[in-house]
Image (cartoon, rainbow, N blue to C red; front, side, top):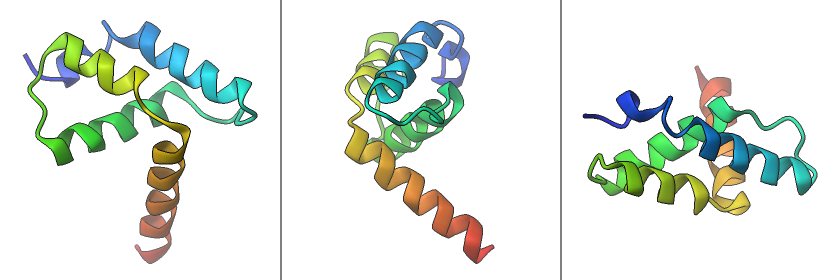
Length: 80
């Protein structure tokens, strides 16, 4: 089973992380953005596709890591 196959199972964790960022003043953060950031992080670390690993990556995502990822994504879009 891949991380992509587990997406629906971890939707509550994605929602929780997005709401955490909303509470910190970043109301435009979506579940999909959190998911994409976590997937990029999992690919870089070559994490094993297990449910507890995925939930840990989602809930452990810091606002700093998310904002860095978001900034890099914006630069990539501008270059393309």
